[in-house]
Image (cartoon, rainbow, N blue to C red; front, top):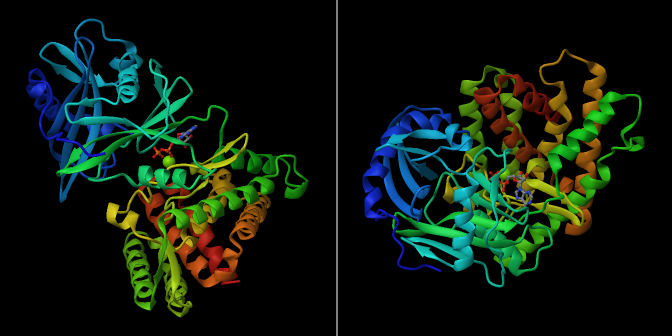
Length: 470
Ligand SMILES: Nc1ncnc2c1ncn2[C@@H]1O[C@H](COP(=O)(O)OP(=O)(O)O)[C@@H](O)[C@H]1O
Ligand SMILES: [Mg+2]
């Protein structure tokens, strides 16, 4: 799929200067964007790496890759930039980057007159000045659909074309084939029933490597987010705490169990498609070391974690006694209820890019499938406790949250065990350590971003400490 691509060459000659002028405006503008991941440090410089003219004329659509320099960090991001000389539509007004040579330049993902071109180029299999638009083998796409951006996203930007397709543009780029696309392709090859079919991709070149910048998938217009479904169920139960979860109309346990089966299916499919490796004692030791280092770092920043450090250390140390080898495989890496969709025919798993904070090399490493299980178990705790955040202490509601989480965590593991043939809870020491490691990560995240929520991972750590490995 690689061609003579080189996005380091700038696009149409007329826009060379524009790219540099835009780059000069971006240090002010980037931090206002939700998807910009570098809000923790000042931007010292932004440089244009490439500028491709996707649609010439007025309005104009440019694809821009910029390198953002911050203290000790250099990261590439992609932007869709529209430009208009005449009338600027409302959508553009709220996304304005600035004026260059009498034209208004703006973030173009909300401009349906411009974004339609991306799908059309894909249908054509176009190579536009180093950007390669491709369809996946066998995919038959309809051109000419208008797009709107979905509003729920945090770290990337996705455009929905006529409720048929969804195009995800990866905002922060890393050289090479994107893990989300790689795993989707692998899962499609083995016939997975639990993914939204990959239909196309866009790639350019970064650091001399063909690099994924976008992925098109089938869109499921009737699907419901797992987080939304779970939250509704918790809310129902909290509205009438006297009802036990199993008697509740909105009980989620059946879905949680089906979700467990779907995740186990996906894990088996990933093993079939991409193989496994055995981790020996030395590898396990490295994992323990990484967990202990993270614990120390987070405890330095968050005093509330300090009382739990001895218990957490003991939980991580205990992993050293786990039976080796441990089977490693490609996993999702960032599995939670917001990454799964309930469709009419069952659960789909989305977004295989992996843990946002980890490096690409780190994300692509083979890992224990239990990490994904741990991620989902943490998510049940979050779903249960979210409604308590910021409210007064209410032991009745706290008890409801605990019961809901326990019931659904168990149902998820039951479903997983039915398909996998082994129960994740049997690897209690490992599963507990992985859950606690995730909770430590959450403590750091909440401390930095949503201090009100710190109580959620801390309460879970406390619970896991009291319960001990089952
Ligand atoms: N195929 C799809 N059908 C319907 N909705 C989808 C589909 N893919 C993604 N979404 C919606 O878009 C959101 C973000 O997608 P995701 O792949 O997780 O992107 P991100 O990397 O930005 O998190 C999902 O949580 C879901 O609500
Ligand atoms: Mg996601």
